[in-house]
Image 1 (cartoon, rainbow, N blue to C red):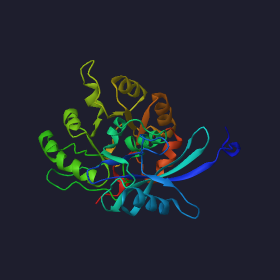
Image 2: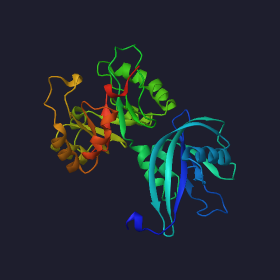
Image 3: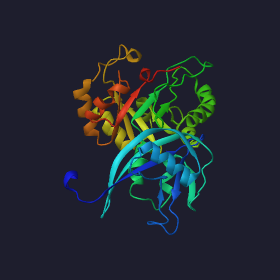
Image 4: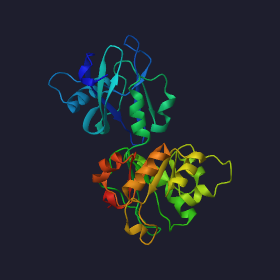
Length: 316
């Protein structure tokens, strides 16, 4: 149905994805006496006349959870249709707040990492688009290489909830694993989703996403399943098909354009070829190669799920 012709009332709602310093997200279970009692949702509520989404969210978080919003960052804005109404949810990350969330309206609360929120059941229909945005965000940062023992830089321009990969190809495996534990905790505290790329069992133990370089996943014995949350590097259409058959949940495809980090390698794909490969893959594909945040819209227009970059995030 055309949105302009849809006569169902449109209700504007502000919704918050509250994040703690352990990288966990808060969900609330609707209490008895309310419509859809027992269903899990993200905290928030109706935007009243004259309120902005940010003002409404601050009010709702105080009323429902007893926390005071410092600032929020937009995450996803979408319309959820129901039989008798439509609900537009202006959803934002909430990382800056004062107080400890408590169920002030009798609702149960639960903290979980984004990949574990599916275990909370049943959920309102509006939860699914938000979970998808949380589990597979649009932005994927890859750390610049530094000597072993040097501090790993932190990104300046990376949106909250983004993926961030500890890529240090010159570090020995033992040194990488030694540093990974503390690095993972630091990224979660900053509001990011850490990604490791050496040992899938170590990544599983730390409950991170695993990034499989192409040489890694192609060397797996026949029948070896991909890790539960895995991004696989690919460089052509055949690689995309093979990585999908292996069980990867997302692909990193490049290079779109030439970059200093891959000077002298294969010729860049360019957007037409990249788009053809990505659309044929039939799954989430991140674009990499000469990209920065201001190229996200271009990538999405060519069929990308998001962008990945090393230099594009402004490291310090």
